[in-house]
Image 1 (cartoon, rainbow, N blue to C red):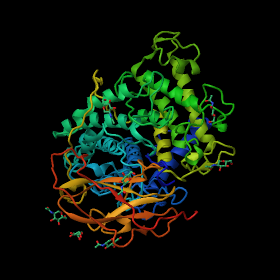
Image 2 (cartoon, helix red, strand yellow; image 1 turned 180 degrees about the vertical axis):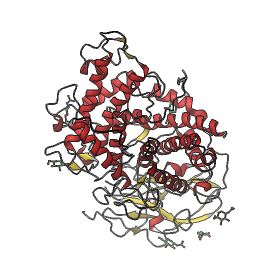
Image 3 (cartoon, protein in one colour; image 1 turned 45 degrees about the vertical axis):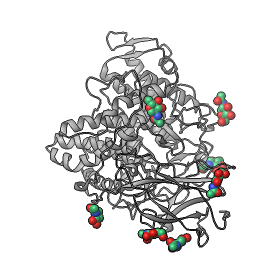
Image 4 (cartoon, rainbow, N blue to C red; image 1 turned 135 degrees about the vertical axis):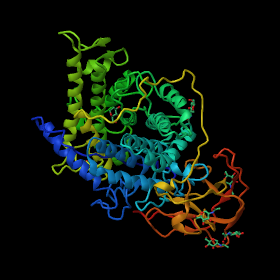
Length: 629
Ligand SMILES: *[C@@H]1O[C@H](CO)[C@@H](O)[C@H](O)[C@H]1NC(C)=O
Ligand SMILES: *[C@@H]1O[C@H](CO)[C@@H](O)[C@H](O)[C@H]1NC(C)=O
Ligand SMILES: *[C@@H]1O[C@H](CO)[C@@H](O)[C@H](O)[C@H]1NC(C)=O
Ligand SMILES: *[C@@H]1O[C@H](CO)[C@@H](O)[C@H](O)[C@H]1NC(C)=O
Ligand SMILES: *[C@@H]1O[C@H](CO)[C@@H](O)[C@H](O)[C@H]1NC(C)=O
Ligand SMILES: *[C@@H]1O[C@H](CO)[C@@H](O)[C@H](O)[C@H]1NC(C)=O
Ligand SMILES: *[C@@H]1O[C@H](CO)[C@@H](O)[C@H](O)[C@H]1NC(C)=O
């Protein structure tokens, strides 16, 4: 993969979560039970194998760094993504709380690594003063910045990281360690919540790193983070800056994405897709609370709209022309599912974590109906139920009475869930290794990144749900309702290095935003970067130069651009570099091409996104050509 050029969209990502087997999931005597018991333990171990400093598959990774996959070529996933790492850490925290005490050291290492990572200046920007650097999607495994062109920022990662750390903080408080939760962990969480409260209403790239817009998955995760963050702040007696945005995030989540049949995964974008996307299903399993109501504003798995959405998305993959792997599988049975039907990344195949995620979604819903002792089918969810239980009617079912259909309906949904796990089982190699995808075309081999951390983590969390093990509840007992009137919003964040957790004591620099715009005709696969003579601009070092973005590139105007926060008041000398497609030497502009710019004085109270200067440059020097790799 690789985010190559003007016309390529970013490609892919990764990620994950993990967990541990704790013996409660003993075989029940059929082969699916036996498979799951074995695969769950193996999957947890494989998650740990991908975490530094001692993970057997990731030499060189720092302590607490969760690597996406050991794969370094075709594709190169040897990085840590904030989203994948946070989802993986949530599963680790859940497994820890379920009893696997040896996982605590992984959690502690993770907190430290993330405290450091929050402060790293990167192509999304700096940590101080406005937190924009926190939106960077991925870093090198030694906790330094990744400088290549990428789909950035991504605004789900900080929310998911907050959720994982909030779950752990609540455990600390319940185990006599409130002081640690408050002084060590909260400062990390607080930066992430500030980021969410400040930027939830700005566009960013989706979890697949391809679409710039608003993503259902991100909004749902942001809502959870702000609600839980607010409750934790109250328990700790501290202030949550940003949590006041929760109600408006709920409004946006409930009003903006629903089209009457399903949730459109990406809005505020023009991606030309139907919008049926695993994005929405993975969002709801990350927001699952067994005690929440099906009408809760967080959109739980048992939500009627959620079930209709689930059906619309799964049905899109029942097309045997698109997915030969699903040929002949009748309706009502689980199939191999992928991200979205227009997907072309590695030919757009089914993913293990998504197929397991479909099962997890259904187990979650069943758990909620069991907890509530009631199941209401309405017009919106009727088609979902009819597919697996043809006698379903629009009404409320309860377990009362001899003829109650409640148990049969729950059984039908559970069997449907199991049938997705059967698909995972069928396509899992004998050694239990889980890559990112498995080929939709015979012989259905595993493909893309090997040993994907997120695949393993997803298997563990699915196994927990099937075994009746649920993460701590987070929805307030009175439930959540969204306001009727949606309005745009943003709360200015408060950012400080979480030094007690191990962050370096970085200090505030007063910055002004400079937008570098350069006309530079490039070929597919080539990138343009900017550098200059200050530390901010990378000190003429190619490895620290800033990648520009080609999203505004057209034949009429070959525009490459980026907005960069630079230390106010400095005079800088700067120029552009061409990065070739096959690792050829970078091409610098001709001698004498350097330009000079004075960064304007800053205004600490200004909108952090305001641009103070825009350059109007044209590439000066030779052009590049493809290496033909
Ligand atoms: C911001 O919020 C408003 C109100 O909910 C919504 O209409 C708009 O689409 C949102 N924009 C983004 C980029 O989130
Ligand atoms: C099935 O998938 C093929 C290949 O993507 C597509 O051309 C066709 O329109 C799809 N059929 C339906 C009914 O969606
Ligand atoms: C999927 O399998 C087909 C048929 O064997 C093969 O041509 C194709 O290259 C495979 N795709 C991937 C991404 O592995
Ligand atoms: C900022 O931090 C650096 C590195 O820790 C330190 O050398 C410098 O004195 C600090 N500056 C201010 C103004 O605090
Ligand atoms: C960068 O270059 C400018 C223009 O030549 C100069 O004024 C400035 O002092 C230089 N800054 C550094 C840090 O070298
Ligand atoms: C001009 O740019 C080059 C890089 O292209 C750099 O090595 C050189 O030091 C710059 N000159 C000045 C005076 O900043
Ligand atoms: C860049 O291209 C635009 C559009 O063609 C043009 O208006 C502008 O003058 C160009 N800038 C430079 C420095 O050539």
